[in-house]
Length: 464
Image (cartoon, rainbow, N blue to C red):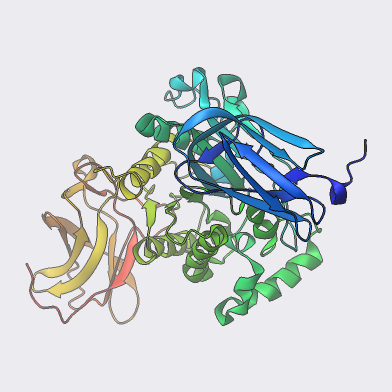
């Protein structure tokens, strides 16, 4: 039977069987219907109605505590849509490129790491919505495809490892239903995931030129052009109530030589996603790029942009992964440690946990009579060196801009001293500045320090 969309009552695919709805936030339900149609939504004893205008309708329901299962009923008096087995709990959006979407089958099976035995059982109250990857020049009102799946061992091979692990870690801590909305596509640059309105800002006007070039060489369906996935895949998820975002992306920007743009574009992406959900303070947790020995300095530049975003953009958290040592893999197979760090960040930023998962964070570098000193924010911890190894990875440069390897030692709970016999007055310092550096600076909990580069302050005076 042909579906006449202009005369049909519809609801967003997010409101379908096995959905998870965000607890403790207003619930907005939306869809399409002919103009003037009165649409009534009933959920867990709450009922609201709205009149469709311009082919769209939307209702708002009061916040709820975690629970379920419930039925969600939508009717226009003649037709009815019913979503069954709907839970209320915590909902996160998982975005990015291939490392966010990498499935268990692609990492070699659920036992490849020897850390997935718990996944053999059923986690009925963990649900994942994998949105169809759809590119569009104009904002779409619903997904091209996608549905909610309950987590079970039989489905694991085709599910993305990081969203699954993250959901399990959250549920272990919170003991409520967990829903993950996955919006990811392999090989995509950050520009694919921002709205066209961003190009109205002078610093992003180049995106329109890039879009025109990509449009000439790519088919209409191909997502590898600016704005296409934001319009076709992200907008349909708005304004579904969520708790926050996890993000793993940046490889394509590094591989395609666009790292220099990332320092401005990535914070703009964060703002655009928050604006789209009308959640200006929504936590945005992301993975800093790991080591990749086939990469170039572009990898270090993207990592630095990510580090600065975590420092400058409120309510963000960065999982440093430079120590995981799968340097030959564009798609590292050890996803569990990555998620453990994301989950610790979520616990600290969102759920009030004491443990943060943060490693030492750069504060400043300054000149002292005994050498160049670098101080770190260590919270309640102290600096350490992984496995007691030499503290490699530090480099200094003078006015000529040429970096040379330097000796380094931990000289206090939050301070590293860096020396080079032939550089009396270095002006800049960097650490781990390579595509796949060997780095060993951690805190005493073993969380690594991020690679960085910074100027050396010669005005601070002696502080040791």
